[in-house]
Image (tube, rainbow, N blue to C red; front, side):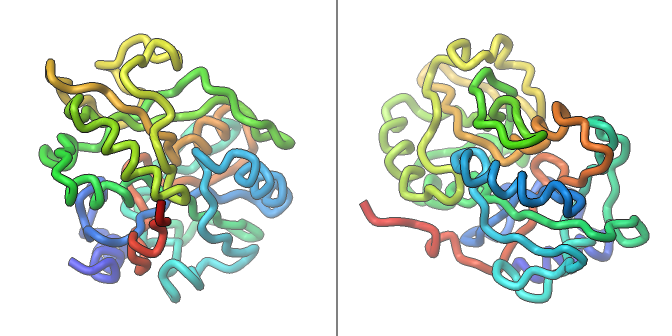
Amino acid sequence: MTPAELRALSAAGEFDKPTAGYCPGYVQANLAAFPKEYAQDFKTFCRLNPKPCPLLEVIGPDLTCSEFLAPGADLRDVIPRYQIWRDGKCTEIVHSLRGIDITGFVFFLLGCSFSFEEALISAGISLRHVDERKNVAMYRTNIALEPVGPFKGHMVVSMRPIATDKIQLAAEITGRYPDVHGAPVQMGDPDSIGIKQIEKPDYGEFVQIKTNETPVFWACGVTPQNVVRKARLPYAISHAPGYMFVSDIKNSEYAVSR
């Protein structure tokens, strides 16, 4: 289906799945939204932490439609699942923000590693979570972030088992996409970034790592949710991990030549 068709199904409550593998070729984005008094600090936080928080578009305050990634797409209902955060806790998961008070909110759309998966698959690099229609495994780490105002904490990463003889190729390919997390932050040593039980991801679903494969970790756009948890803001909104905003922009527009 096209991105517009997927967004329409989400708005109608007829699409409720992780978006990995859907609408190949198009940029997917993470969402974070805050009352306007926190917006400048978060924008600066993204600029200082571009690896996990690559900023693609800012919308608001008091505006809800994308102007760049998908002109006219209303962020209140085009994502399959949203999380409502209060005092650092996810208190509710909803399928639409309509009827929820978002007066003065500013929406941030951040690059997502789903966007470089098409390039990996095209290069013959298998992605098991896509093949098995699972949500990608995501982990909290000990990688510290540059703090700004209330926003501080540690990076979240996504993991993909990659054939060991192809991990350098995977690093080279994803390095061409700096605006959607870019090259891996770690390859093969989860303990070094604070991951003690790789079979138990903090978000998403674990997939088997075979003997000829290496776990490879990329910065993840779920990082702001980890940060919101620590900041304990009175009110914030995010996408649910793996349930992304699918844009009308081609992934190829974010590739850089090497």
